[in-house]
Amino acid sequence: MFGWNGKILRINLSLSKVSIQKFNSDLALSFLGGRGFAIKILWDELPSGIDPLSPENKLILATGPLTGLPIPSSGKIVVASKSPLTGGYGDGNLGSVAATELRKAGYDAIVIEGKAEKPCYINIEDDFTEVVNADDLWGLTTFECERKLKQKHGKNVGVLTIGPAGENLVKYANILSQEGRAGGRPGIGAVMGSKKLKAIVIRGNKDIPVANVDDLKRLGADGYANIKSREGYDFWRRQGTMMTIEWSQENSVLPTYNFREGVFDYAKNIDGYTMEKIKISQRGCPYCNMICGNVVRDSEDRYVELDYENVAMLGSNIGVGDLNLVSTLNRLADEYGVDTISVGNVIGFAMEASERKLISERIEWGDYKAARELMIKIVNREDIGEILAEGVRKASEKIGGGSYEWAMHVKGLEISAYNCHTAIAMALAYATSPIGAHHKDSWVISWEVKTDRFGVNRGKAEKVIELQRIRGGVFESLTLCRFPWIELGFELEWYLKYLKAATGVALTMDELYVIADRIYNLIRAFWIREMGGWSREMDWPPQRWFNNPLTRGPFKGEKLDRSAYSKLLSWYYELRGWDENGIPRKATLKQLGLDYTIEKLEKTVNLTP
Image (cartoon, rainbow, N blue to C red):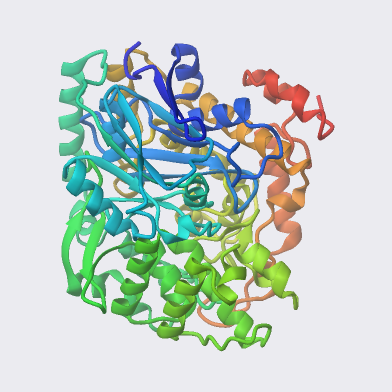
């Protein structure tokens, strides 16, 4: 078998046991890797209804058949588990040397279960794996921990670590690498913390098995040159995702004041052009020439990487219009190991709750010091931070006062940085994302704004699914970055060529779409099993977008229409092969080779033929 190493490293922290599981091409060609491997393992091995923070839960790190190969943007790894934030499937990806080192160590994935008695970290080098005491690392920030481990194991090792947020089981703690690369929004860092696992260190010295090395090297070099020659490449290298601040402001989708508005008075103070004035360098993921990490000095004279989501959620969404201050909030979140998107959402929720006098704390819009203090309280679970550390869904349940109407989440995961008062397809993308409200699976909003902003038609549902197949199915399972394709139009055909050279298997996009659908349906089956049922309401976006129209900007007075959204959702279900409640039909499951899910699902729901 080429492309895949064919081995999964398994570590039981309760038993201090390490083993290796081999797999064949059946698993590889059915699920590819990354997200596909993660959901297959979780479905097969997790008992239904377990506590996500119990030793029974499993933490999975998975790569794909192209990870670590000399082709564009191949330095990603997926981290996944049952989410403590949502109770369903949760994952995220991050660019890290750990991804490439895992492949060179001879593995495609790691499965970690159990719980250590004391803080520990895992050290992997090729065939050698050990669980090491980490008393001296527990309590350190992610930056401090990674530096200390690199001093001990060498500067070229891959390191994945959690910060105090993960240790304290903040429900949206994530996993960090390379001092700013984060993944695992739905609380995968909390799962790691619940296992007393502070970090994972990986070094590999082996060759990745490739079907045609010469073809791969040639195609990789051609791909890098092609990307570099494309219109827009130079501007991308200047601003990266920070260009999206200006775009979102112009199109009234910039999240402002807890998603009340789509425009921000101080947007120019936090946009890509302002960033360029204070930018000092760039950083990127392994094997990437997009290099999107814009490094600046924050208000405390510390280095931090900026991108759109972080700046929007810790800037306009909470009313902070000074990029130096936003940068500090961004860096603190990364150091503490708390998701920048969710914590910006949660702080915005708290500011609105304070404004409405539902909490005693006075936290005003734009108050940087209050936001900074609140973030620290959340990380340490102090005072109001104890409630907010549970996420906006749980916080709104405890605070009450109708706050559920402006708790900006889907299925418990906080909305990322696009306001959808005037973007119904993007609202659908958020609502049907397989991990809860996240943009990575179907960033349909740019297409929607350009083509048919206010239309409600079957074509919008088709587009959401098309992007979910490509972004959430193919890229998440090959574990590749989407930016060359999204931002510069790097054709999907390149990836088919890379797959053929790496694996020796010639796959078409239609065949990859079938694999993507298999993955999406298995994730949906996992959700249904864990929730004990399903209904349409679970695929609805936040109430704010239906109830409270925009009061500013060119689309003043606009809001989403419930009947229009319901119609769009029905089209989506029909196209997916699901029933009117969002449950996969038996015929759909059988067609995708998921017959083995039917018996378990029928214990919970009635499956239609």
